[in-house]
Amino acid sequence: MTQLPSRVLFGAGKLASVKAEAERLGGRRVLVLATKFQVDLAEQVASLLGDLCAGIFAEAVQHVPYETVSAAIEKTDELGIDLLVAPGGGSTIGLAKGIVLERPMPILAIPTTYAGSEMTHIWGISKDGRKTTGRDPIVKPSTVIYDPELVASLPVPMSITSGVNAIAHAVEALYAENRNPISSMMAEESVKSLGEGLPLVAQKPSDLNARSKTLYGSWLAATVLDQVGMALHHKLCHTLGGSFGMPHAEVHTVILPYAIGYNQSHAPEMVAAMSRALGCDPADIAGAVQDISRDNGGPVSLKELNFKAENLKKAAEIAVQSPYYNPRPVVESDILNLLQNAFAGKRPS
Ligand code: NAD
Image 1: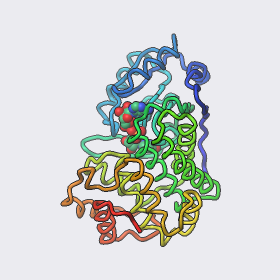
Image 2 (image 1 turned 45 degrees about the horizontal axis):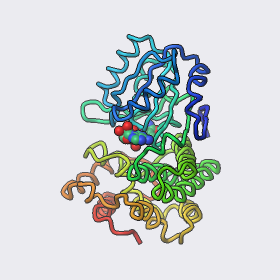
Image 3 (image 1 turned 135 degrees about the vertical axis):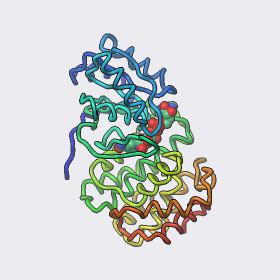
Protein backbone atom coordinates (compact mmCIF):
# COMPACT_ATOMS: atom_id res chain seq x y z
CA MET A 1 0.00 0.00 0.00
CA THR A 2 1.36 3.43 -0.94
CA GLN A 3 -0.06 6.24 1.10
CA LEU A 4 0.96 9.74 0.08
CA PRO A 5 1.11 12.08 3.05
CA SER A 6 -1.38 14.90 3.64
CA ARG A 7 -1.75 16.97 6.76
CA VAL A 8 -5.39 16.93 7.88
CA LEU A 9 -7.16 19.30 10.28
CA PHE A 10 -10.69 18.25 11.19
CA GLY A 11 -13.31 20.03 13.27
CA ALA A 12 -15.88 22.80 13.48
CA GLY A 13 -14.19 26.20 13.28
CA LYS A 14 -10.92 24.83 11.84
CA LEU A 15 -11.20 27.24 8.91
CA ALA A 16 -9.74 29.82 11.30
CA SER A 17 -6.38 27.98 10.99
CA VAL A 18 -6.09 28.70 7.29
CA LYS A 19 -3.49 31.49 7.62
CA ALA A 20 -1.26 29.48 9.96
CA GLU A 21 -1.53 26.49 7.62
CA ALA A 22 -0.72 28.62 4.57
CA GLU A 23 2.36 29.94 6.38
CA ARG A 24 3.32 26.40 7.33
CA LEU A 25 3.34 25.54 3.61
CA GLY A 26 5.59 28.51 2.91
CA GLY A 27 2.91 30.53 1.11
CA ARG A 28 3.64 34.23 0.67
CA ARG A 29 1.52 34.95 -2.42
CA VAL A 30 -1.69 32.92 -2.16
CA LEU A 31 -4.42 32.55 -4.82
CA VAL A 32 -7.86 31.54 -3.52
CA LEU A 33 -9.91 29.51 -6.00
CA ALA A 34 -13.71 29.17 -6.04
CA THR A 35 -16.78 28.77 -8.21
CA LYS A 36 -18.87 31.86 -8.82
CA PHE A 37 -21.41 30.39 -6.39
CA GLN A 38 -18.91 30.37 -3.53
CA VAL A 39 -17.41 33.85 -3.88
CA ASP A 40 -18.55 34.71 -0.34
CA LEU A 41 -16.56 31.80 1.05
CA ALA A 42 -13.55 32.76 -1.10
CA GLU A 43 -13.72 36.31 0.31
CA GLN A 44 -13.98 34.96 3.86
CA VAL A 45 -10.88 32.81 3.24
CA ALA A 46 -9.07 35.77 1.64
CA SER A 47 -9.81 37.90 4.65
CA LEU A 48 -8.55 35.20 7.03
CA LEU A 49 -5.36 34.97 4.95
CA GLY A 50 -4.90 38.74 5.26
CA ASP A 51 -1.69 40.02 3.67
CA LEU A 52 -0.82 36.53 2.34
CA CYS A 53 -3.70 36.68 -0.13
CA ALA A 54 -2.67 37.97 -3.54
CA GLY A 55 -5.99 37.35 -5.32
CA ILE A 56 -9.17 35.38 -5.88
CA PHE A 57 -9.98 33.39 -9.02
CA ALA A 58 -13.68 32.50 -8.84
CA GLU A 59 -14.17 30.87 -12.22
CA ALA A 60 -13.98 27.17 -11.33
CA VAL A 61 -16.65 25.15 -13.15
CA GLN A 62 -17.62 21.49 -13.46
CA HIS A 63 -15.29 19.06 -15.26
CA VAL A 64 -12.24 21.39 -15.12
CA PRO A 65 -12.18 22.74 -18.71
CA TYR A 66 -8.66 23.28 -20.02
CA GLU A 67 -9.55 26.89 -20.93
CA THR A 68 -10.29 27.63 -17.25
CA VAL A 69 -7.02 26.02 -16.18
CA SER A 70 -5.16 28.17 -18.74
CA ALA A 71 -6.85 31.37 -17.54
CA ALA A 72 -6.01 30.49 -13.93
CA ILE A 73 -2.38 29.77 -14.85
CA GLU A 74 -2.17 33.19 -16.50
CA LYS A 75 -3.40 34.78 -13.29
CA THR A 76 -1.01 32.66 -11.24
CA ASP A 77 1.96 33.85 -13.32
CA GLU A 78 0.81 37.47 -13.31
CA LEU A 79 0.50 37.53 -9.50
CA GLY A 80 3.59 35.40 -8.73
CA ILE A 81 1.52 32.84 -6.81
CA ASP A 82 3.29 30.24 -4.64
CA LEU A 83 0.31 28.53 -2.93
CA LEU A 84 -3.24 27.65 -4.01
CA VAL A 85 -6.06 27.57 -1.47
CA ALA A 86 -9.13 25.75 -2.77
CA PRO A 87 -12.31 26.06 -0.69
CA GLY A 88 -15.13 24.19 -2.47
CA GLY A 89 -16.14 20.90 -4.04
CA GLY A 90 -14.42 18.60 -6.52
CA SER A 91 -14.59 21.21 -9.28
CA THR A 92 -12.64 23.85 -7.34
CA ILE A 93 -10.10 21.39 -5.96
CA GLY A 94 -9.89 19.89 -9.49
CA LEU A 95 -8.96 23.32 -10.86
CA ALA A 96 -6.14 23.61 -8.33
CA LYS A 97 -4.88 20.20 -9.46
CA GLY A 98 -5.03 21.27 -13.12
CA ILE A 99 -2.92 24.35 -12.31
CA VAL A 100 -0.19 22.51 -10.39
CA LEU A 101 0.29 20.02 -13.22
CA GLU A 102 1.84 22.95 -15.12
CA ARG A 103 2.91 25.21 -12.23
CA PRO A 104 4.04 22.94 -9.38
CA MET A 105 3.18 24.41 -5.96
CA PRO A 106 1.38 23.17 -2.85
CA ILE A 107 -2.42 23.06 -2.57
CA LEU A 108 -4.35 23.70 0.64
CA ALA A 109 -7.80 22.15 0.12
CA ILE A 110 -10.91 23.04 2.11
CA PRO A 111 -13.66 20.66 0.96
CA THR A 112 -17.27 21.82 1.18
CA THR A 113 -18.86 18.69 -0.36
CA TYR A 114 -18.38 14.97 0.28
CA ALA A 115 -16.91 14.20 -3.21
CA GLY A 116 -13.39 13.43 -1.94
CA SER A 117 -10.94 14.98 -4.42
CA GLU A 118 -9.00 16.62 -1.56
CA MET A 119 -7.35 13.36 -0.44
CA THR A 120 -6.38 11.97 -3.84
CA HIS A 121 -3.59 12.27 -6.37
CA ILE A 122 -6.16 11.86 -9.17
CA TRP A 123 -6.69 14.74 -11.61
CA GLY A 124 -9.17 15.29 -14.45
CA ILE A 125 -9.23 17.90 -17.21
CA SER A 126 -11.75 18.37 -20.05
CA LYS A 127 -10.51 19.35 -23.48
CA ASP A 128 -12.31 19.22 -26.83
CA GLY A 129 -15.34 17.49 -25.25
CA ARG A 130 -13.29 14.70 -23.63
CA LYS A 131 -12.36 14.34 -19.97
CA THR A 132 -8.91 12.90 -19.38
CA THR A 133 -7.95 11.65 -15.93
CA GLY A 134 -4.63 10.59 -14.47
CA ARG A 135 -2.71 10.06 -11.26
CA ASP A 136 0.24 12.23 -10.24
CA PRO A 137 1.58 12.73 -6.69
CA ILE A 138 2.18 16.41 -7.50
CA VAL A 139 -1.57 17.19 -7.46
CA LYS A 140 -2.28 15.76 -4.02
CA PRO A 141 -3.17 18.59 -1.61
CA SER A 142 -0.49 19.06 1.04
CA THR A 143 -2.96 20.16 3.71
CA VAL A 144 -6.70 19.54 4.02
CA ILE A 145 -8.98 21.45 6.37
CA TYR A 146 -12.26 19.60 7.00
CA ASP A 147 -14.65 22.02 8.70
CA PRO A 148 -18.21 20.70 9.20
CA GLU A 149 -19.48 24.29 9.42
CA LEU A 150 -18.62 24.76 5.74
CA VAL A 151 -20.43 21.68 4.52
CA ALA A 152 -23.53 22.70 6.52
CA SER A 153 -24.46 25.14 3.74
CA LEU A 154 -24.66 22.33 1.19
CA PRO A 155 -28.38 21.99 0.33
CA VAL A 156 -29.99 18.67 1.35
CA PRO A 157 -30.43 17.26 -2.19
CA MET A 158 -26.74 17.92 -2.94
CA SER A 159 -25.73 16.55 0.46
CA ILE A 160 -27.50 13.27 -0.28
CA THR A 161 -26.07 12.83 -3.78
CA SER A 162 -22.60 13.97 -2.73
CA GLY A 163 -22.75 11.62 0.29
CA VAL A 164 -23.74 8.66 -1.88
CA ASN A 165 -20.91 9.63 -4.26
CA ALA A 166 -18.58 9.14 -1.27
CA ILE A 167 -20.24 5.80 -0.38
CA ALA A 168 -19.51 4.70 -3.96
CA HIS A 169 -15.75 5.13 -3.41
CA ALA A 170 -15.99 2.99 -0.27
CA VAL A 171 -18.10 0.27 -1.94
CA GLU A 172 -15.67 -0.17 -4.81
CA ALA A 173 -12.73 -0.13 -2.37
CA LEU A 174 -14.35 -3.14 -0.66
CA TYR A 175 -13.91 -5.26 -3.82
CA ALA A 176 -10.87 -3.50 -5.32
CA GLU A 177 -8.27 -5.84 -6.76
CA ASN A 178 -5.54 -4.14 -4.70
CA ARG A 179 -7.54 -3.71 -1.47
CA ASN A 180 -5.89 -4.45 1.85
CA PRO A 181 -7.19 -4.93 5.41
CA ILE A 182 -6.67 -1.26 6.25
CA SER A 183 -8.48 0.10 3.18
CA SER A 184 -11.36 -2.34 3.77
CA MET A 185 -11.63 -1.32 7.43
CA MET A 186 -11.75 2.36 6.47
CA ALA A 187 -14.26 1.72 3.68
CA GLU A 188 -16.65 -0.12 6.01
CA GLU A 189 -16.41 2.64 8.61
CA SER A 190 -17.04 5.19 5.86
CA VAL A 191 -20.28 3.49 4.76
CA LYS A 192 -21.40 3.21 8.39
CA SER A 193 -20.78 6.91 9.11
CA LEU A 194 -22.43 8.12 5.93
CA GLY A 195 -25.31 5.64 6.17
CA GLU A 196 -26.08 6.84 9.70
CA GLY A 197 -25.28 10.50 9.13
CA LEU A 198 -27.01 11.33 5.84
CA PRO A 199 -30.59 10.82 7.11
CA LEU A 200 -29.71 13.05 10.10
CA VAL A 201 -28.39 15.73 7.72
CA ALA A 202 -31.62 15.50 5.70
CA GLN A 203 -33.66 15.99 8.89
CA LYS A 204 -31.58 18.91 10.15
CA PRO A 205 -28.98 20.25 7.69
CA SER A 206 -27.45 22.59 10.29
CA ASP A 207 -26.78 19.73 12.77
CA LEU A 208 -22.99 19.94 13.17
CA ASN A 209 -22.75 16.48 14.74
CA ALA A 210 -24.43 14.97 11.68
CA ARG A 211 -22.23 17.09 9.41
CA SER A 212 -19.11 15.92 11.31
CA LYS A 213 -20.16 12.29 11.03
CA THR A 214 -20.78 12.55 7.28
CA LEU A 215 -17.61 14.58 6.66
CA TYR A 216 -15.62 11.96 8.58
CA GLY A 217 -17.22 9.28 6.36
CA SER A 218 -16.25 11.24 3.28
CA TRP A 219 -12.66 11.68 4.52
CA LEU A 220 -12.41 7.89 4.88
CA ALA A 221 -13.97 7.35 1.44
CA ALA A 222 -11.58 9.83 -0.16
CA THR A 223 -8.63 8.14 1.54
CA VAL A 224 -9.51 4.73 0.09
CA LEU A 225 -10.26 6.27 -3.31
CA ASP A 226 -6.65 7.43 -3.30
CA GLN A 227 -5.28 4.07 -2.19
CA VAL A 228 -7.01 1.46 -4.35
CA GLY A 229 -8.44 1.08 -7.85
CA MET A 230 -12.08 1.66 -8.72
CA ALA A 231 -14.15 -0.61 -10.99
CA LEU A 232 -17.46 -0.94 -12.90
CA HIS A 233 -19.44 1.66 -10.95
CA HIS A 234 -16.94 4.47 -11.50
CA LYS A 235 -16.46 3.43 -15.14
CA LEU A 236 -20.22 3.64 -15.77
CA CYS A 237 -20.49 7.03 -14.06
CA HIS A 238 -17.49 8.31 -16.01
CA THR A 239 -19.19 7.16 -19.25
CA LEU A 240 -22.54 8.74 -18.37
CA GLY A 241 -20.88 11.98 -17.23
CA GLY A 242 -18.19 12.24 -19.90
CA SER A 243 -20.10 11.08 -22.98
CA PHE A 244 -23.64 12.15 -22.10
CA GLY A 245 -23.10 15.19 -19.86
CA MET A 246 -24.96 13.67 -16.91
CA PRO A 247 -24.45 15.40 -13.52
CA HIS A 248 -21.65 13.78 -11.48
CA ALA A 249 -23.05 13.16 -7.98
CA GLU A 250 -26.62 12.41 -9.15
CA VAL A 251 -25.41 9.76 -11.58
CA HIS A 252 -23.32 8.13 -8.84
CA THR A 253 -26.40 8.06 -6.63
CA VAL A 254 -28.61 6.39 -9.23
CA ILE A 255 -26.07 3.86 -10.54
CA LEU A 256 -24.56 2.66 -7.23
CA PRO A 257 -27.38 0.29 -6.12
CA TYR A 258 -27.34 -1.42 -9.54
CA ALA A 259 -23.53 -1.67 -9.64
CA ILE A 260 -23.69 -3.29 -6.20
CA GLY A 261 -26.40 -5.67 -7.45
CA TYR A 262 -24.26 -6.54 -10.46
CA ASN A 263 -21.16 -7.34 -8.41
CA GLN A 264 -22.56 -8.77 -5.20
CA SER A 265 -22.43 -12.44 -6.30
CA HIS A 266 -18.68 -12.03 -6.93
CA ALA A 267 -17.77 -9.87 -3.91
CA PRO A 268 -18.61 -11.68 -0.65
CA GLU A 269 -16.36 -9.44 1.49
CA MET A 270 -18.11 -6.34 0.17
CA VAL A 271 -21.52 -7.87 0.88
CA ALA A 272 -20.58 -8.78 4.45
CA ALA A 273 -19.05 -5.35 5.15
CA MET A 274 -21.99 -3.44 3.67
CA SER A 275 -24.50 -5.51 5.58
CA ARG A 276 -22.65 -4.80 8.85
CA ALA A 277 -22.23 -1.11 8.01
CA LEU A 278 -25.86 -0.52 7.04
CA GLY A 279 -27.36 -2.98 9.54
CA CYS A 280 -29.34 -4.76 6.83
CA ASP A 281 -29.76 -8.27 5.45
CA PRO A 282 -26.82 -9.21 3.16
CA ALA A 283 -29.33 -9.87 0.36
CA ASP A 284 -30.70 -6.33 0.68
CA ILE A 285 -27.56 -4.17 0.54
CA ALA A 286 -28.32 -2.73 -2.91
CA GLY A 287 -31.86 -1.80 -1.87
CA ALA A 288 -30.62 -0.33 1.42
CA VAL A 289 -28.18 1.93 -0.45
CA GLN A 290 -30.97 3.08 -2.75
CA ASP A 291 -33.18 3.81 0.28
CA ILE A 292 -30.64 6.40 1.49
CA SER A 293 -31.49 8.44 -1.59
CA ARG A 294 -35.19 7.53 -1.95
CA ASP A 295 -36.04 8.17 1.73
CA ASN A 296 -34.28 11.53 1.74
CA GLY A 297 -35.59 13.02 -1.49
CA GLY A 298 -32.69 12.01 -3.77
CA PRO A 299 -32.90 10.57 -7.28
CA VAL A 300 -33.27 6.82 -7.95
CA SER A 301 -33.59 6.58 -11.74
CA LEU A 302 -31.75 7.76 -14.86
CA LYS A 303 -35.19 8.62 -16.22
CA GLU A 304 -35.73 11.35 -13.63
CA LEU A 305 -32.27 12.73 -14.47
CA ASN A 306 -33.62 13.14 -18.04
CA PHE A 307 -31.31 10.55 -19.54
CA LYS A 308 -32.64 9.51 -22.94
CA ALA A 309 -33.71 5.85 -23.20
CA GLU A 310 -32.35 5.63 -26.75
CA ASN A 311 -28.83 6.30 -25.38
CA LEU A 312 -28.79 3.26 -23.05
CA LYS A 313 -27.37 0.92 -25.70
CA LYS A 314 -24.65 3.39 -26.71
CA ALA A 315 -23.71 3.87 -23.04
CA ALA A 316 -23.38 0.09 -22.55
CA GLU A 317 -21.18 -0.11 -25.66
CA ILE A 318 -18.86 2.67 -24.45
CA ALA A 319 -18.66 1.25 -20.92
CA VAL A 320 -17.23 -2.06 -22.16
CA GLN A 321 -14.85 -0.62 -24.76
CA SER A 322 -11.63 -0.69 -22.76
CA PRO A 323 -10.89 -3.58 -20.39
CA TYR A 324 -10.58 -2.91 -16.65
CA TYR A 325 -10.71 -4.90 -13.43
CA ASN A 326 -14.12 -5.73 -11.99
CA PRO A 327 -14.96 -8.63 -9.67
CA ARG A 328 -17.65 -9.89 -12.07
CA PRO A 329 -16.79 -10.06 -15.77
CA VAL A 330 -18.14 -7.04 -17.63
CA VAL A 331 -20.44 -8.29 -20.40
CA GLU A 332 -22.19 -5.80 -22.66
CA SER A 333 -25.64 -7.43 -22.57
CA ASP A 334 -25.52 -7.58 -18.75
CA ILE A 335 -24.39 -3.95 -18.57
CA LEU A 336 -27.27 -2.94 -20.83
CA ASN A 337 -29.60 -4.78 -18.47
CA LEU A 338 -28.07 -2.94 -15.48
CA LEU A 339 -28.54 0.42 -17.22
CA GLN A 340 -32.14 -0.41 -18.17
CA ASN A 341 -32.88 -1.18 -14.53
CA ALA A 342 -31.18 2.06 -13.45
CA PHE A 343 -33.26 3.92 -16.03
CA ALA A 344 -36.46 2.55 -14.49
CA GLY A 345 -35.25 3.00 -10.89
CA LYS A 346 -37.11 0.02 -9.38
CA ARG A 347 -35.76 -0.96 -5.96
CA PRO A 348 -33.15 -3.73 -6.47
CA SER A 349 -34.17 -6.94 -4.73
P1 NAD B 1 -18.81 20.65 -7.45
O1 NAD B 1 -17.48 20.99 -6.91
O2 NAD B 1 -19.00 20.74 -8.94
O3 NAD B 1 -19.88 21.55 -6.71
C1 NAD B 1 -21.20 21.65 -7.18
C2 NAD B 1 -21.75 23.03 -6.88
O4 NAD B 1 -22.01 23.15 -5.47
C3 NAD B 1 -20.78 24.15 -7.22
O5 NAD B 1 -21.51 25.21 -7.78
C4 NAD B 1 -20.23 24.55 -5.87
O6 NAD B 1 -19.79 25.89 -5.83
C5 NAD B 1 -21.41 24.32 -4.96
N1 NAD B 1 -21.04 24.02 -3.58
C6 NAD B 1 -20.03 23.25 -3.14
N2 NAD B 1 -20.05 23.19 -1.80
C7 NAD B 1 -21.08 23.94 -1.37
C8 NAD B 1 -21.60 24.27 -0.10
N3 NAD B 1 -21.06 23.77 1.03
N4 NAD B 1 -22.66 25.07 -0.03
C9 NAD B 1 -23.24 25.56 -1.14
N5 NAD B 1 -22.80 25.28 -2.39
C10 NAD B 1 -21.72 24.48 -2.50
O7 NAD B 1 -19.29 19.19 -7.04
P2 NAD B 1 -18.55 17.93 -6.39
O8 NAD B 1 -19.54 16.85 -6.43
O9 NAD B 1 -17.91 18.29 -5.12
O10 NAD B 1 -17.37 17.63 -7.39
C11 NAD B 1 -17.59 16.97 -8.61
C12 NAD B 1 -16.36 16.99 -9.46
O11 NAD B 1 -15.24 16.52 -8.70
C13 NAD B 1 -16.46 16.08 -10.66
O12 NAD B 1 -15.89 16.73 -11.78
C14 NAD B 1 -15.62 14.88 -10.28
O13 NAD B 1 -15.09 14.21 -11.40
C15 NAD B 1 -14.58 15.49 -9.41
N6 NAD B 1 -14.01 14.56 -8.43
C16 NAD B 1 -12.67 14.31 -8.50
C17 NAD B 1 -12.10 13.46 -7.60
C18 NAD B 1 -10.62 13.20 -7.67
O14 NAD B 1 -10.10 12.44 -6.87
N7 NAD B 1 -9.92 13.83 -8.59
C19 NAD B 1 -12.86 12.84 -6.60
C20 NAD B 1 -14.21 13.11 -6.54
C21 NAD B 1 -14.78 13.98 -7.46
